[in-house]
Length: 321
Image 1 (cartoon, rainbow, N blue to C red):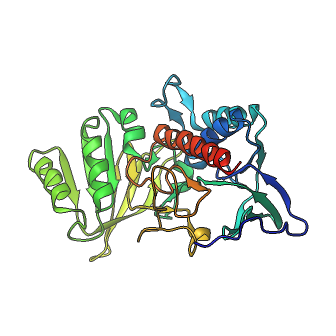
Image 2 (cartoon, rainbow, N blue to C red):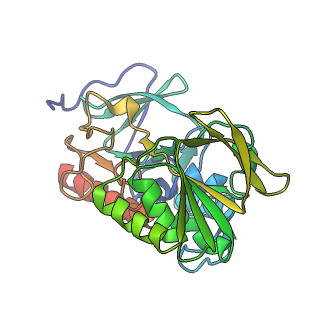
């Protein structure tokens, strides 16, 4: 992309900051720790609903050195750490970006902000079912991450909802912990890769996985925690109930990259493409976390990418000087 170097400052624009970070999950806040400790003025545009997916999580027991911490508490600690060395945190949604000129221009809440470099750490949103009880019981038996939550369901009964590779992976992880694992899929065949399907069918033959075809979950039921799910046969319309301890929704994620279309290179699913570690196709614009990482999707890996992006941004700024 061609860039206009040293573009005139727009009227009413604030800045420029050395670094503007878009997002407020582990990737964003870790990046801010590194940029602020590197003496770079840092603006964090965290969004009105800040903190990412961990704000919807209860106990987190796989983050190093913090084996028993609530998701929101972990994010609050990260936010405090990110602002400890001078990072400025704004709870505003970024509505538009102009990455064709330097300093880069970001618009949030009607205000323009300028930055010499940008780190995109907007994450990805879980695709939920949108059925009754889902919001209420999220984090209380309803989950979207088996590697995160499977240990909480040791010797219990769980269902996995979906038919793609993500659902197969969730089910395979859960068989190591749960007594019974049932996959509920609304079609009569999976869309997952042949290799993943074989693993699941082998475990079905061994009695470790059960598959319910042509059904969809229409409601999650429970007061303080998930107690059962209601499912509906898509062919007959018949509904039934399953007593269950946990449900894992695995119908995909959507990267939060819409506002970057047409500038930053994306893959066919909307994930930002990497160019040499955390660099994007635009010099001075970096990326970290689930908005590019569709494989691991863990808080600790997002934090690692945030570290890398922060260091790369500092190096870029030094080179510009």
